[in-house]
Length: 426
Image (cartoon, rainbow, N blue to C red; front, side):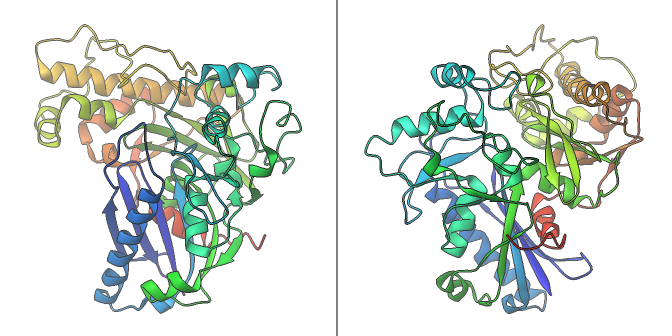
């Protein structure tokens, strides 16, 4: 039996097909439709998914397999990205992405009702985004909140109103109590918009007949509840024991550590996702590879990295951000980037950026240890930044533990592995 994973990432859509043994059969990708950041149409996500699926089916056939061999699929999306849709899964508002912030009025409204240090507090919270989208639904046409992965799940199955515990977490869902908070309506949340939430990896619904026909997929293909991109990246590494840690170095930096206990501190953006019978604790910083791309193209990054001595200190104290606002390990929507002084030497400047991001990573793991987690013996590294040997060595110095490159670093592979966890049905 083959399984399919679909990753709705920041830069595009990727897919992966695995066999029963977890071996990679084929992969594909497609770029997102180019859209203004403040006016995103969620239908663009679906268009990119369809392009990716078409490429994936072709790649499978080239590898000697048929789309009819796929029996399960799961989708991951960027955590906190969302849209409101009507009963036909048509967007009735713009989509707001995971890094959208500045919703001060909504944050004040939430703060009047939410418990202290709740995950929904702050002007960059997912719940604040939901309240903003509600206000933009002036005709009252919305029937459901869809997180990014939920939206694609509904498009694939024709079944609207399902989400997973991982994507719903930042919107306020409690995975231990298995319920939405009782104070939501008092805070102005339209409870009828809230989806039914099931465990990540649980059976959700079979594929829609028209989608199956379009791509040659079997009608008995079961879609499973998805997860977030950072959780999927963790699963892709094969990490499965308590204390195992994974840092994802993509556009942003996300750290995750598997723990038998739930570790939460929303005041610093630290939270735990439920994965099977374990907890995946960690957080996501707005720092990461996106800041490097603000200053250097890939060729320049490669050339300059080769000239850095990773065993020496840069002498610079940066907090690299592309724009104001941070989520973890400092939860401050107004935190200013610290990128000065900028030396005339680009080698030293890049060295300082690498070191600044590595220090944020180390600060994140210290925050986990201070709250009861076991410090990792080593850190698996995934994402584009994991392939930069100079950066990895700088990170080892700051972390104080070895950094290992994971065999797989694609969130799409983690989404496929989610299908194999055997969580069960909804």
